Image (cartoon, rainbow over all chains, first blue to last red; front, side, top):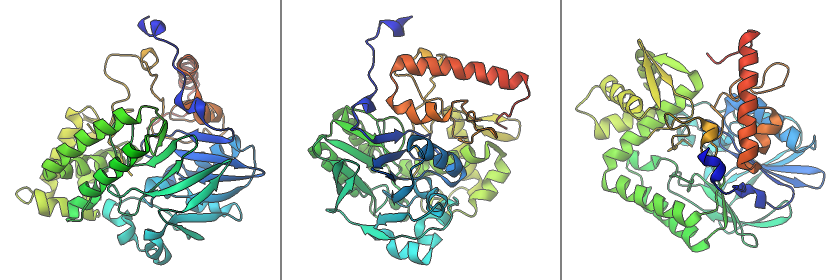
Length: 321
Length: 82
């Protein structure tokens, strides 16, 4: 077998400092990063609500039953904070969020938090401390710098440990891509911010990147180059960005429900403000339903979904492109 | 939020024959009632938690094991994804 001739690949996260664990999840839940701190634990990001029980079980298992003391969120999207409420229920847990989200979380303003815009679910949680770019956090045995990483979300933060050059990049950089640039579809800036975030990562030159989704990776330079190319393409065609946002939203929903009729899918997205924004700005020549039918066709063409009679079904392991 | 995700299982290749070995996660992420394994990917908690730190040989072993578990669960009428 060809693969046996390849050199043994050491897992990138084999280089993690003692007491730091990457819980790699799929695309519906973000990755979580767990830090052992004596007899307590800190976790960065908590996944999507539907997976919260498994998230809690993983933390309990890896943390060997030690209590969770802190939750740190890179941003407030439903796939990064969906486990907050359940995990905080277990005891005295300090929830620490980006300062830009403070008011929206305090009022639980689902409009501003984006849960209504995306028609995604997230149980309510509070916060105990606000995080700002420039803050230093002691996580496990390391000192982590809080960095601004707008683009995908205007308030998103990353965490960087300079001694070992480890970056927790949230959705600013994955091995192949980055989180959809949502702000642009409603006329808010996002491309310029995303470029700034990539510039920052390029300057840091991390030796290990732990992304919000997908496997940890070492070659940050190559990932940043791919990300610039993709950003150039999106920025030169905002319509392409809008189509991409629709594909991401539809795939995300199908990952939750498994399959649905196209009619039910269209009905679901009537609740999603982003879908209406995209419709009005970019596809006003189509009906709302036609726009989403096209999205489903594009996902099927990409192999991310498949039609089975009147139903569209999510294909395991396949993305939106 | 939200993926720009690469295709994890390109058509025509068994996941465990690829390098790097892709994650078996299919976003079901729910443990069986007895907690033995995830009803979506058939990995144990230790295999999910440890995945990011496993080398490719270990990942291939996990893929082989989860196929066996899946086959056994299918025979005994175990829980399947809808």
